[in-house]
Length: 217
Image (cartoon, rainbow, N blue to C red; front, side, top):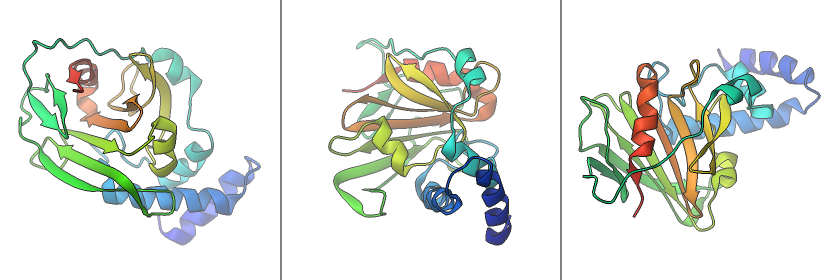
């Protein structure tokens, strides 16, 4: 959809929601540009793939769906210190990888940007892609910035249609939900770090095993 058609469709949608169309569009464009530049992409594979820009305008206003929320169980982390490390992304250790994925991901590190697109002092995002074709198999990003939490992260990162859940009691949002499983997850295990993770949508049950085996030194 070109920009003119998108504006027309989105404006008509947000009119029915009693919000400012221009404000919504600015937020969607900003987040979508950032999403294209830095996030884990791929319509067929990424849990954070763009489902459609008109839908994005609506989910920017109301991203949570209670029917999905009720069906999605909380996530846990139960890895032990003795479990061998299978891969590492910016110091975060993975003790489980879906079969066939390389233990040495491609790594890209960039500055973490604020809502105005300016670098945050001390802020970085490290993206690890576990596939010969970008992040199509599995992608994991580690964002670190002073005082960063999930709410702050979601102000500058569009993750698409999402549902609230938890990871070991910490607030999280899940995406790519099919039935009672998701293929994408974003959460902050502690202040100053946010983890964004997705697996191929056909491997959605594997996401729980990956998350359960994450170790943060």
